Image (cartoon, rainbow, N blue to C red; front, side):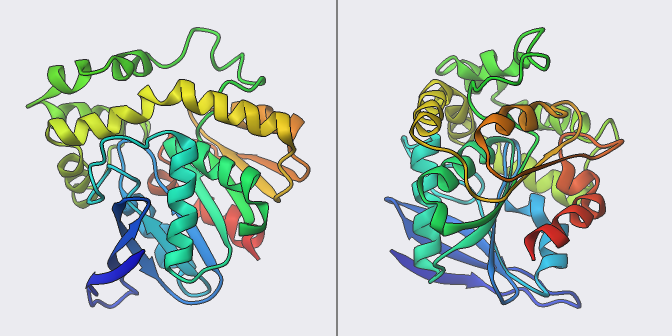
Length: 289
């Protein structure tokens, strides 16, 4: 494993430091900020580490905040494979090792939730606190109401090998904008973040990697089912919902978790860390202590 700095931007507020971290046969682009106990932040689709900008600025005064671009996404290596939650969890544990962190609190949203869940299930001694938001955990019971009309339409579209990246090539900006608008209840995402996300998901290879997360969902569902059959989630856990997932994640976690707190963020879309960062921080600040 290797860690090498790329840049250390200067500015009036604490700015993240960017690194290349070699782990699991790939290089992850990783933003870090602050000092103290580690907090690992895992983004989803169509995001990069920049999803956590506001959260990082707040938590960096008390914690060492670590926000990677997940395998294949953002500026991380466009890997040929390894998009199942089990491999991604190993990426995250390897990242902590490379940074000299024995354990971390973990916050995850969307596609970052399954690997965060498996980190805590497989290596509970490495995860101090777990915050999961706006996602489902495999096919565990509890999400029946959310899935009553079937899974979100894009799950099937993204899952067909080679289809979505071919259809969308050249129209990535409009497609990403749809998710950013829907994820903020029509408010949209500011120019700096929007441009960074569009750039990160432009091109056939970038799209292939993003959609590989959806193509690995059957494998992830099996990994999660096996983990739950083998034991319980013992790490103190918080489930945070908004629109559209609501309390479906909490309902999935409730039967398998020893210490679970659930919250709903009112008037908030899917992209909680950008749409309602202060509301999220009010929940997680006391929980992480």
